[in-house]
Figure 1 (tube, protein in one colour):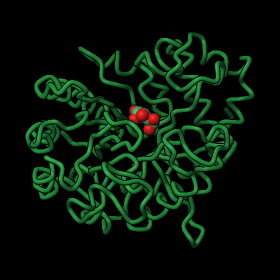
Figure 2 (cartoon, helix red, strand yellow):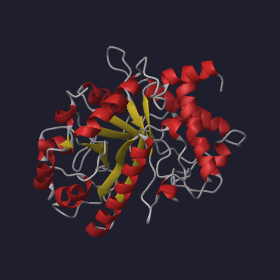
Figure 3 (cartoon, helix red, strand yellow):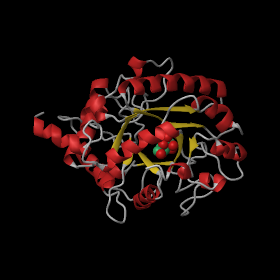
Length: 360
Ligand code: BMA
């Protein structure tokens, strides 16, 4: 790459933070995230303001707010089906509504993160169709490369459309191609080599940054938990320092095994925070939760017992799905975890919207 091109990229991407000015929306968010990471752990929730345990599509509502009177500091949304320029995402959330909620969360001083579960571009089946060679088929020279290009154009279009009423772009944390070390997604370990994955991630970065000028993205690398994880395994699919601002990990308890979850969480967070510190990147627990929350004191006694020992920017608890009975990871009014969640809310170092909105 020649020098003018490099300089140009420095102005519009965040992964090149070493170049201080001028400030893009992404650089402003990145700076704020570093400040907030020192204050405590921001609490996040997927699809928080669009549906909950016993409701859907109401406005101004949130299971977290209904329990503790405050919104989460971080809200997560998923772009699945944006690749078809569809009206609704894969979980039925209208993109218009999503855009409105993202801007509202930003305007009230909160933070937003985006994931994307696109369908398999070769077979047309879901993101969970891990047919071999899929990634190869969308890379340059592949049979469906043009499709990837058009899909990225829609993603960029949505991200660029996130603007305040006064026309300022809203920054978001984007973690494309998450859980790639798992075997369940078409961009995962069963469907590509680490090199192919890295090409896919970098291509996504380059298209969004250089072609579509998305200057409002903080980039996250977000593999899944794996047994006996170590640095080499964690970094197996890592696209490189230039393309990443935040290092994440996804880890769940699907089996109601508190001890196992705590051990896994501790091991992964030790590793993650060590690697992030070495690389001078932010660290976050990019997805977690105990499925169906069978333990009434899970938030303070299971999760917080471990998480409080680490310096992390945020945690994103997964969704209280309206369309899948098992997919419940957050408290709600009347749920057995309600009292415990209030205690979790009152912990000094758990940060909700009111704790962060003035810290800019
Ligand atoms: C998954 C599950 C799915 C959902 C997807 C995107 O982890 O919750 O039911 O469609 O996330 O939100």
